[in-house]
Image (cartoon, rainbow, N blue to C red; front, side, top):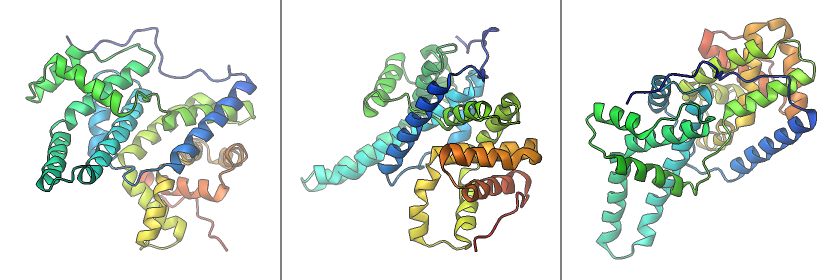
Length: 311
């Protein structure tokens, strides 16, 4: 059974302008608290599975199976969090196996299992993400198995179900994590309520394109952002380590993507958008500007918007 066609009545684009102010405020506070909580507990392996090849693989599969953008980002984040848990388990295994050679073999076995099942787990994360995406186009077992068989894997339907369960249990069934797109869409709603002059629909479309680009060029863009922020082309190991929290900050990412989109669509209104974003999130205009500079440098090879050097 192949992938299903997208129903004609379904639109993956959000409708802006219909959210009550008190709901917007509560949602914004919830996302901000969720973001801060994640950053305060940030594991050292964060970002380990967001390399461009893995992200591109997920994006291409999501497109093949007609999933919306929310599902593809959800799949990336689920795989990332699942693999971090796997790495943590491997790192802990020696201390939990104190019987001489058994600790080495146990760790090696866990590594081999992680490598051997990586594609299976990736597909399971996409399946789970499809089930969270309004249930309009779920990737069922037959579709997933057909794809895996095309890659010469010989998994059974039972193994596929067990893989989904393994992901769920490892993440303690906490799979409905907010993606950067959720932050972007809420901030666009707030911007519209606050009188932003740019219409939300084209801004949203540009944001999605730039968010895709950032996911695919993540390391290069954040490397530029780090060097811009410290005004040094050779950051120290300590600066790189501290910068991990910046790379995993979804609120900063959302603000930066909206700012960049506003600049691309209408530079005349860009400063107003930045001021609004600063007031809404508390993120400084300088930080927003630096993020936009880093993204645009890789999108266009441009140095605009011009950096305002700190005095």
